[in-house]
Structure formats: structure tokens, C-alpha cells
Amino acid sequence: MGLTPGSLKNVSQFIQLAVAPIFLLTAVAATLTVFINRLTRIVDRGRWIEALEAELQKARHNELLVLGRRAKLIYRALTLGVFSAIFVVLLMGLAFAGEVFQLDAATPVALLFLAALLAYTAALLCLLREVFLAIKNFQLGIDASPAP
Image (cartoon, rainbow, N blue to C red; front, side):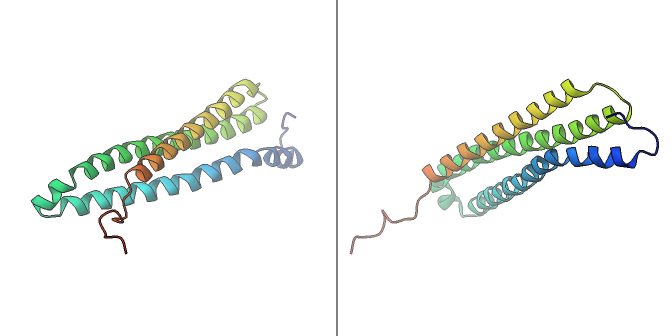
């Protein structure tokens, strides 16, 4: 489907084919928002604990350690998510350039798409691990209250 100068029909057909990666890019962007929100909450909680009096802070030392591990997992997920988005943008640009300049970009585009999916999957696995860690260390204080 090589493009010829003034071939608006060919360009519009190719843009229609480029819509699928846009959906992946939208999903990645939404997930990045989730990662950023979780990281913000972890940082805020850590700052709150660090602002406590020294004796209260000592009692929360283990919680700070868990928050540190959770922050590293979310940071890793965020990094992988950004790489996934970069791969998607690169594959869209390469696919379009390949069509405009009549280059065979099928293999690099497929590899970039695979890399984007793998990075996104790894990011979601990091998120899942962080959620498991958060739930494992979650306490409502129910154990400390006397039974009715």
C-alpha cells in the first residue's frame, strides 16, 4: 500500500490501521495514572510516619520498610509502563514511516508491539505484587479492640 504524493485515500486507510496501537497506548496511559496515584499514597504515608514523634516512629519502623518495598515495586511498574508506551509510539511512527517511504517495517513493528506487550505485562505483575504486599501488611486494628 505504498503512498503516492496526494494519495489522501491511502493515508486515511493507513491511519485506520494504526488505531489498534492507540487503544494499547490509552490503556497504558490509564494504568500509569493508577501507578502514580499508588506511589503518591505510599510517599504520603511514609512522610506521615516520619513526622511522628521519635518513639511512635520506632513502633512504625516495619511499616516504613514495607512502604519502601512497595514504592520500589510501583516505581518499577511505572518505569515498565513508560517503556511500554514508548514502544507503542515508536512502532506507530515506524509503521507510518515504512508506509510513506515504502520500507519493509513489518518485523521491527511486530517486535516493538511484542516488547510493548511484554513491558506492560511486567508492569501489571509489579502492580499485583505491590497490592499483595499492601494487603499482607494491612491492619484495621480489629485485633487490638476487645470482643463485644
